[in-house]
Each structure stands twice: as C-alpha cells, then as structure tokens.
Amino acid sequence: MEGSNGMKRATIKTIAKMANVSHTTVSRALNNSEHVTEKTRKKILDIAMEQGYVPNVAARGLVSRRTYLIGIFFSDLNVGTSPSFLIEVINQVKRILPDDYSFAIDSISHYQGGVAGMEERFDGVIIVSQSYHDDDFIDQVVAKNLPVVVLNRPIERRDIYNVTTDDHLGVEMAMSYALRMGHRQFGMIKGEASFVSSDARQRTFESILKEHQLTLNPDWIKAGNYLLNSGYEAMKQILMLPSIPTCVFISNDDMAIGAVRACLDFGLHVPADISIIGYDDVEYAKYLEPRLTTVSKPTSAIVQAGVTALVDMMDGEAQPSENQTLAPKLMIRDSVKKIPLNEN
Image 1 (tube, rainbow, N blue to C red):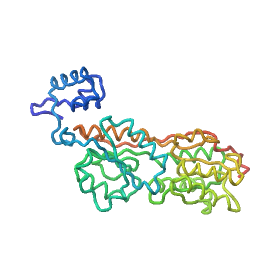
Image 2 (cartoon, rainbow, N blue to C red; image 1 turned 120 degrees about the vertical axis):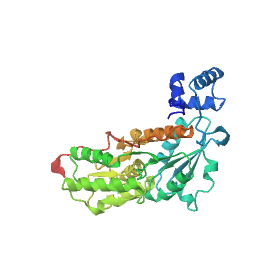
Image 3 (cartoon, helix red, strand yellow; image 1 turned 90 degrees about the vertical axis):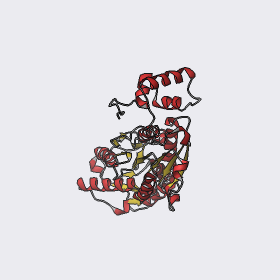
Image 4 (spheres, one colour; image 1 turned 180 degrees about the vertical axis):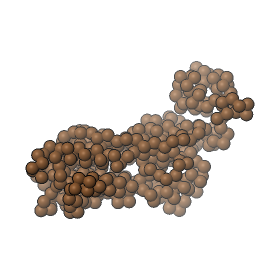
C-alpha cells in the first residue's frame, strides 16, 4: 500500500518487524492496551511516528468502534460437530487470539432469520464451515463488511480468506497403507450426511476400492454422525453380519473410539480380529489401547492461519491474497494388522 506521496505506507507488520515484536503487541500498543509495558509502547509509538504509520480509517479496527469480541460459528453444534473437534478449535483460538479479545460460539443453524446487528456485536467472524448449507450465512456476514475467515471447508468464493485441508489425500494415504498391510475387505462408517468432509471421504474410499478392483459390500458401509455413540452403533451393525471386513475405515476418531468399544463388547480385539483406521488424530488417539492409526487433520494449523489473518484484517491489514489447503498426515500406530494376502 502506498501513501499519497508514492512512498510505501507503514503497516502494523512493518512496525512489528522493526520493533522485533509480534503484530499483536504492536496492535495493543497502538490501542493503549494495559498488556504492553511502557518501554515497549514507547518504542513502538516512536517507530510508528518515524515511519509515518497511518491507521486504515476504513477498517473496523478503529479503537472507538471495537467490541473486542470475535464470533465463532460452526455449522451446527448439536449435529455432527464432534466434541473433540470443537475443543481443539476453541483451544487454538484461545492460544492465538490477543488477550484483549473474547469470543462467542454459536451454530449457523441459529441464524435462519438473518444476521441483523452482527456488525455491532463483533469485530470479526470465524466461520468453521462443514456444509454447503452455510453459504447463505457466509454471504450475509460478508455483506456486513465484517472481517471474516472461513475455515475447514473449501468454498467457491475467492474474496474470502479460506483455509482448509485435503480430505481426498487423507483417505488415499489411509487406504494405501491398509492395502500395503494386505487388507482387501473393507468396511466404512460414514460421517454426518450433510457435511462436505463426509461426502469427500466416502467418495474417495469408494473410488480407491474401484481402482483396485475390490468389491464394495454395501452391508459393510454404515452411517454415523461424527459422534462417539454413532460409531459404536454402526460398528455393532457390522459385527452382527454373517461376515465382516478385515479393516474398517471410520470417518473420524470419535466414531472410531466408539467402534473399538463395540468390538470389545463383542469379544473381538483390535487389531487381532479386525483393524480400524480413524480420521482427525484427536489428542487422545495416541493414548488408546490399541493406539489408533489415523489421518492427522491439521486443525491447529488451520485455526492458527485463520485467526492470524483475521487479527491482521481487524488491525487494518489487507486480506491475504491466497487461500490455503494444508496437507494431512498419516499417523501409523497399532490398530491395523498386517495380514497375508492368502487370508483374504
């Protein structure tokens, strides 16, 4: 950005680099926050004056208009949003958001009547989108000229900062590993039907079976809703069948935990009798017995990128010009058994 004299205008990031502090500290100093020492404040203000820093008067980040409250909206907190995912998002937001700010959490489903007054309540909005049904809400929030980021689900718009991950790659890694371990008979427990991630993971699972000319047994495909109990019930349905798969891919770790419990209740051991692969890599996945092989979704990195971008926008910085798709990782642990091909 340039000033009227053609010189590049100093930004909060410029000042932060020169002062060797974070952009959050610069923002606090410029807003007279009590969380900055007088020595640091003076150093930052001196640099700002020397560099001719001019706040973006069009930004909502003007001190006189700030509420220091961020809105965090999930598609639906009652349906499909697993407790593990919710907790991880909240913890990351708390860790990264400047101390001055608080945040409120709600479901997009509660705003069917519109978003009137949202611009007076929030300085910025984080939308953790899981469904295409969220698009109307996203459009309404953007129309309020609020700083906004959309996380978790890829969206078609390119005027909103969007951070997500590659679910197709995650499932490919999980299934490729299971195939290398000798498995050829696969079951699946799907996630919440209305969520984009559930659809993407199921389609990739089915395409890999087709690619390897493996039979897709519809009796081995059961529906869950990303919650622990649904994984338990879905696995019970699979285990009561006349024949069962050697490996079950489960669309998230919470359901996988329920599935492991169902196996134990049926007198089966994981992975000796049946193998299980999860998705997400929640914190307790590595402490289970057996430790869960799963796909690590980079939720922490997604939230960090989103919150950092939102804080910058609230401080008058330009919106990031490129959206991000972060790669998942396969976490190989103990829940998948290696079997000889002649056992299939």
